[in-house]
Image 1 (spheres, rainbow, N blue to C red):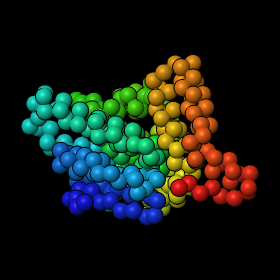
Image 2: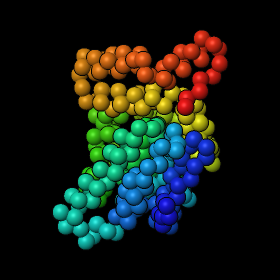
Image 3: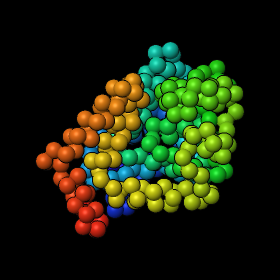
Image 4: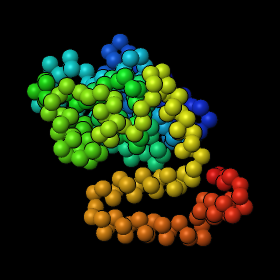
Length: 258
């Protein structure tokens, strides 16, 4: 597929999706969302085991394209927010793990995009935040909800209400990102992690995502029951990955996940 604002490439079992609008710091608009929707509609997950998201130039994604907001009606704004939320939900709900390689600014919609990923690796020099309060706005792509679930309500409001953004180190300390690396090493570190994850059981990875995602919306009791049932289902006779994993362990060899 050919895109104007996205680039997709594969490195064996790893897919890399790059936002390529560097002149606008990869800002999100309806055209970018249209291409992202087309990309997600393609059956790309069948050929890879992990997806890495990153940005071209100095930014991961610096937010939404504010210029377009000047002409939006209330209905336009609602539809734009719903579109972004839908696309980010689709990323969050992919069966395969998704890693955000935050090579530069991740502000507003850019941080919301990163929060839709399963794991975030960031440059030590980057800046992250949800600064919509400075524009008389709020995050519109589920950012208020994802961030508070990720780091707690107090920490989320601290980031959103001050509107100034935070350093990569502070983001790491608060749990917004899981790993910091030197500038220039973000994508390579993300790919290295992706390769390690891709060597694990695809079924197990998918179930981990499902258990964590659904469990956060459930009581601990109900989530625990869901986990127990999922664990038990892996022992059905047709669960080839469990058979291969256990057999490989006992035979002291690497499993072959077909």
